Amino acid sequence: MSQIRSENSYINNDILPFLASNFGYPIHNAEKVKINDVPIFRPSGGRAGSIDIVYYYNSEPILLVEAKSTHTSHEVALAEALVYLRNFPVDKPEFAPSGLPPKVLATTVGKEIKFYKWSIDYSKPIPDFATEEITILSFEKLLQYYGFTGGYSPRIVSEKEFKTDFFDELIAIFRKELNEDKITPNLVREVVYQIINYLSFGERYTGQNPYVKISLQGQKAVRDLFNRFDLVNSSGPGIAKEFRRSILRSFQGTVLNQYLTEQCVIAFMVNLIDELNSETKVLDFECGSGGFLAAVVDKVRLENIRGVDIDELPYIIAKTYLALYFKKSNKEEIDLLPIKLGNGLFYQGNDWDLVIGNPAGGSKYEHGNLDEIDDNIDRDLDRNGRKDDNLSEYNLSIQQAVSSVKVGGKICLVLPEGFFSNSHDEFLRKFIAKNCKVLAIVGLPRGVFKKGTSTEQQQSGAQTSSQKMSILYLQKIRGIDKENPIGELDLSELEYPVFIASVNKPVSKSGKVCDWLEPGLDVVLQQWREWQNNQQLKSIPKIEIKIIKEVDEERDAPFLPLFEEKTIQNETVKPKPIETKTETKISKFLKDLFK
Image 1 (cartoon, rainbow, N blue to C red):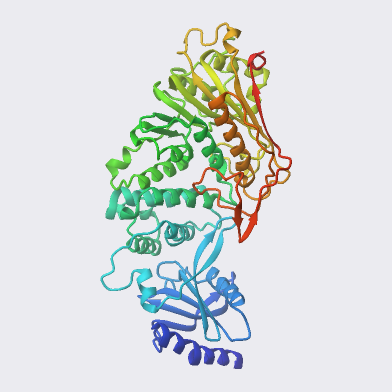
Image 2 (spheres, rainbow, N blue to C red):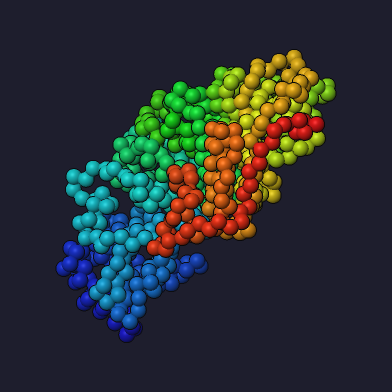
């Protein structure tokens, strides 16, 4: 008991007066400041202790304080504060009416104080709280942060604030409502639908799903969050890109990222084409969460793009991205956004300038609707008299791409490397050779993509695929003869140069994929541009691809500088001209691809 009295004495005689006199925090007010009064419970239900100080306002917890005497450190105090944060009694309305813990923490060591905001660390299998230190907040500033001051109007949320102050809190609300420890497809779906339905219906979102399905406590938390921020007037390209980055982060350490193509691969493919303008018509008929569309939307008019996906989760993510990007804030406008839920193998038109994407690469098509697909795609392309014996997903995807693009248009797809050599895919190679000119083939190392092509394949999707993939870049040269789509090949038509490159895996693949892949893609892109200008390769020094530190691979910059000095963490590092695993080749003929 003496230790408790000593701690309470330290809090009452030192900490509370210090916060009151210097920062205007309440004192001697049992409704607004609770000392060792907010309990922490064991999983069995028994009380395990209490939190040093919790400040309240309008019955909501707004600041958790872990107080330590001078013999310890802020690091130790913060570690204990995080324990209390994880175990805050959010399930008890008398302590957390909105079902959320305080967003702001503080640690005191003697009379030295630090403030922190929490966010969610998605890199762990079970997402956990992470903190960043912020400026010390007066009580008035703290109330302004929560929107509790008189005459408060919802504030603009910045790109930096979007994840920590908005998205992570919405994730936390629905994690509690759905009783989910991990980030699941259903959790992400509910969060994204809550955002897009707020944009679609305005204040009437309270009559829509998922809001109407959650508890009164959860509804209060959602209302408080949307009342705090002006999401509509915050919208624009910056918030849209931060939304997408937040989605990508939420998939880290989980089994949800199997339809998310690495950002550096997307950037490379878009820059490989390098012919986009506002009038370019772009189709991604298996668009996933919209990564390729997100990369071209800065250059192409909205009405000139179309994305289609058969799975609901990636469809709604892509649609919400465009709604935020183009500041759409009513249902009529959002319904007109060019993202469709449906089978991308159905007829999508035949006048697209560019078809781009990472289509499903399975060896068997399993989505049904074969009769409707038959109206658009030749199910007996190999002309062996059996319609459905060679219905691999990438067979159908290749046909859809070539059928959808106009003559003179471009196609850029990620395909299994086996497509270029497997004997049973010979008819597909002949189909491409007959109707397209091969501009470039770029081989990617193993480990770039995940297994699985949909969010239903959760367990397999979490594993690194051993399959090698390649980027195939084509130009359509003639219309497809529906009666004889392959026919006899004139091999003399294949005597043209093709750019072929391979990015081999580095010695170490530590860190994120784009950390070690992007430098190799940069080299290939430089050589491609040299080839485009001069029809020959440029002699370049060999470089070491070395990971210095982890970087945020979802940031916008598509390339890393290759040959200039880079300052990293106050240390200047110069690239060294030593052996690289990246090599670039040119093939003059394609005959042996079709033997």
